[in-house]
Length: 253
Image 1: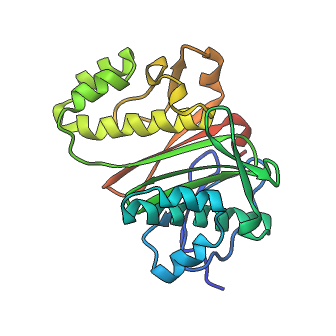
Image 2: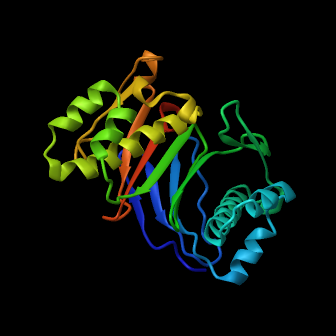
């Protein structure tokens, strides 16, 4: 049996694993308050992709076929199939037997077995991150850091007033990195809450500087939420920014 190469831990007992592209091996059971984060590659060989596609439902395959271009179609099949493989390994079930539902705002949840695990998926290019929790809700986001024509204009449209003011105070050399730091922190929270973009991005504040400790500072629509969630930056490499949001119910000791 191949070992899982490396484990990275942050203070809340969030675990980071590099997942081999080969078959899933050595998955540890989650404690009730643990969170595992997996990094996976979506650029899989054709034979592997075909095998992953056998786990998907007819509805999922029909959705895949609606992609006009091969790359998004391949990434969709790989992400769905690998998610099923991972959750099936935790639950000791055939990945094809897993069934999913969506909440009122479109967040995927397990239908069968019902809510046995909480999970969330994010991907950019051929990189995907999957967070899995046996306790409270989780949200995850990853973005490739890339040049933006007008990061200031984007920040003005998507940041809260407090975030935008802090963004404008940063040196120009830090603003691109800060934009993606803020965006992944915000999207991780929106996904963890289960609302996605139904939660207005300017309704809450996160820390802005890319090297600042990630934190949910305030949620003006639901003030009590600020104490219920913790944010974590993930070390995904210099070309990417990744963030994880964890419910207080999913925190480690």
